[in-house]
Image 1 (cartoon, helix red, strand yellow):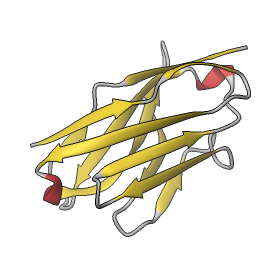
Image 2 (cartoon, helix red, strand yellow):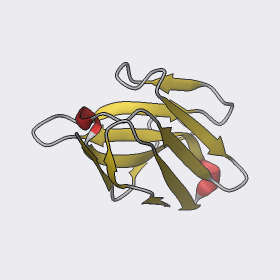
Image 3 (cartoon, one colour):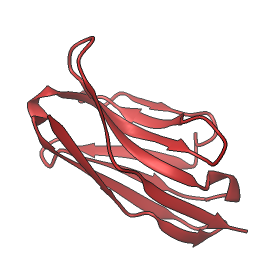
Length: 118
């Protein structure tokens, strides 16, 4: 089992910045790609950004060029630096960790609220 604990959400004005953190514990040897997804009210959960153990990244179109995902494998922690925030970025942000093998379990954090005021 893997536990994911997120921190860093909150309320910020448009144009501001926030940094989310997600620390993994438990069976960390089984973790491959880590990343972030978000879900706004009435919308489906969507990809924000992911990063593999080897460092490859993938970003959702709406955040490309504004946000950066980073990862500290030694600390089993993934970060999301969010700059130039917009009201439409308001959502619950979930940390995600995937197993290293196909078909293995996938883990989710409890979610952290990010609210961007206009």
